[in-house]
Image (cartoon, rainbow, N blue to C red; front, side):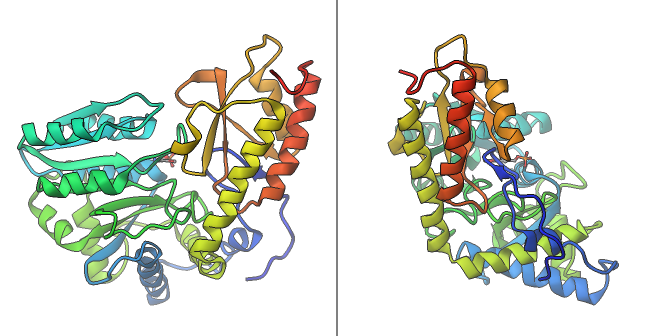
Amino acid sequence: MEVVKPVKRNVLLNPGPATTTDTVKYAQVVPDICPREQEFVDLMTEVRKDLVKVVHGDPEKYTAVIFSGSGTIIQDVLVNSLVPANKKILVVNNGAYSARIAEIAEYYGIPCVNLQFPNTGLADLKLVKEALDKDKDIAVVATVHHETGTGILNPAKEIGKLAHDHGCIFILDTISTYGLIPIDIEDMNVDFLMSSAQKGLAAMTGASWTVGNKKEIEKSKDYPKRSYYCNLFMQYDYFEKVGEMHFTPPVQTIYALRQAIKEYWEEGEQARWARLTKCWEAIHKGMEEMGLDSVIDKKLQGHLVVTIKAPDDPKFDFFKLHDYCYERGFTIYPGKMFGLKTFRLCNLGVITHKDIEDFFVVAKEAFKNMGLALPVK
Ligand SMILES: *Cc1c(COP(=O)(O)O)cnc(C)c1O
């Protein structure tokens, strides 16, 4: 892949899109092509196979189905396509992204058992089991692997086991863990997972997919058709018959995705996980030096997002901190569930612990500029 001219590098510490390589950016610059050409069909086929391989899926059992859109489109697709008539979906909800799954069900008028738990901790699995024991109409269990809103890593495998013990399929939103935390789809009891190009694989926004159980997709053929553009079986069937998306794919985004997958294999699953864990450790080290605390118990964190308590001082202004860092190439993000009294640092992209150390140099300057003494406590 040729890099014609290096692009200004920004370190994105927001919850996606993530910092990408120049080789991924430039992979989009290709001769114009009609996506119905065999050359593009071959590219799609190769990418779909790789997307199953990233999560160690058995290609006999699992397939990847891609849609055009940001991550939410694949939440929409799975929720609207996989609940049989007169059946319910149960959402294990301890954060903003599982709340979104429940909200999608509500928009489609799909009966939903929305099991809410505090968003600072884990779900109580006894209550999940009780809910499943009690209600035999539940056919689908859905939750989020890593709550990007807080940084909590949920016990997905255990929730998937409960789902299967009760004859339900298990849908897992892995949008902020796919390509970051090593995942073995079958071992984790997952029937359908979700991912989006601009997150873990550090590619471009515009393509999202599920890796899903082929038999279950085939079954869904006879489920209520609640959406046209976002119907899973229709898209799957098209891929099976002609090897491509039903409607126009995000052509250039797919080229970037192929390059990002190549870079994923080159780095390696374990090496990537180790690099990101080092970033996360550097975040905690920087916070400690500054006297900042995290909202979520460190033991519950997935090594990818830290929600930080803002200093309890009227001189602290998140926007000033944001702007000071932004002008120097670092993007930070407000907290999702706790308002501006918190902010988040996310280490999802192609960054290293060195970038985090550089960020803290800038953040410390910003704090001093606001008139805050360090450490803040
Ligand atoms: C980013 C994200 C999504 C999707 O958000 P989009 O803005 O639509 O890309 C869904 N779930 C999780 C856990 C996420 O991190």
